[in-house]
Length: 224
Length: 246
Image 1 (cartoon, helix red, strand yellow):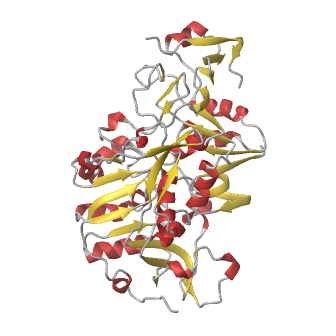
Image 2 (tube, chains in turn purple, red):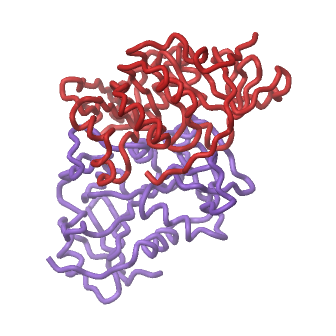
């Protein structure tokens, strides 16, 4: 299978940040989604962290590190005017209760129905368990669920697949997929290829994507 | 009502082999490290550590001691494994899990939070949509095949919901920023997290607090955990730790 050069992870995150409207409450998962926070400066967007914080500030460094103040990825963060702390039940009340506007998560696999797999890593060789964390609660409660991930695995296999071969996190929940090579909408008819990495063709993207893609009439290069 | 105890032995008195202990905190933040050290010192075994989101990965030194001493029978968690599979596979904790010497039982984080809340609030079980469409609809997640139990589901408002049961640990280890003599607690920043709900859920709640003040010093309008949920409080120094890279 052909290997294509695409956007670095930081730039996938930048593209995702453009998708988030001001006045939104947003939860960012581990991995590429966490990097989205680097692109939100000056935006009126409030980050929810499942550990129990609203309005999570930038990553803390040096003397600003406070051992009582981390985000859900265990990174030292900062407090900003308007930050709030609360306990885990209230936090998951926000998440499961549908109060968070946009949720961004990573995934191992996504299919055309909007099902996705993110919690179980078979390469770990542990049967029956994995780090579910808050992923299933976030997915079930999401009003809009965006997936940010590499288009293919490290060894070049499609991550956008016909059938999930990893156990699902949730079904029929994904709204949109952002990869290093493409932006794809998940609609009832299937997957719509909306944006592609400059220089690539829809055929290139199809060659590394299992489900048949619907090509958007207004398809364009990824704007960053 | 004075709940202050003056030494760690007294704080962890009555904890026997086979006990289930809720461990507060979330990764590195708000973990009751001093009480964990006391239980290592005490040497009790066959423990079930009822966690929320990887407090033992945050308190990795204490985890390593307990693994070395073979004190842990089971860990309940939502994020119990090191994030890095490579690091995890080399770690004695994960090796004991792989060998079936430690059971790891996994729940979605919000479900686990609600299991403690239900336990504390006198609700025996509840239905949640979390996990619908995943294998959690069918089975508990555990590395021990014979302990996998079938789950019940019900369609509610067109949504498949999973029946989950309350969790009531024998003990809870809680890390608070400030306690008054009567066990009214305040936490600091994201060190709150799982601590309040675990304090509610356990039969005996044991608190390590960085500061202890007389009753009346805390603003009654700003108490996070009312003292009715707390049985013992011990003062501990504020010790620094690494916010580990999991």
